[in-house]
Length: 99
Image (cartoon, rainbow, N blue to C red; front, side):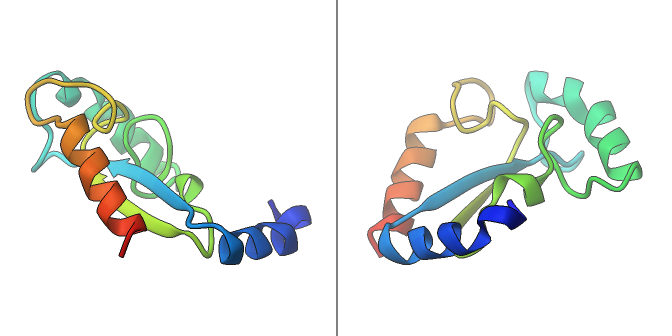
């Protein structure tokens, strides 16, 4: 990323870029997402910071882009189920981009 930082910064100024990420926490984990809590804790203990059980939040957000951070596991933005609303996430994302 460092090698392309200038090009990424220019792109962020020219286009409405939104990076969406999720963070899994014991207080908000629901249904099958709870299966990923041990992995999320493991990533945090090893210095990965907040994450969704697969990807650290810091790795999902580009500098200069708009950011949308929601509670949930890695599939919270794209699949339905208890505590997951992908259509609502898309509506929220569009609202952030169109502000």
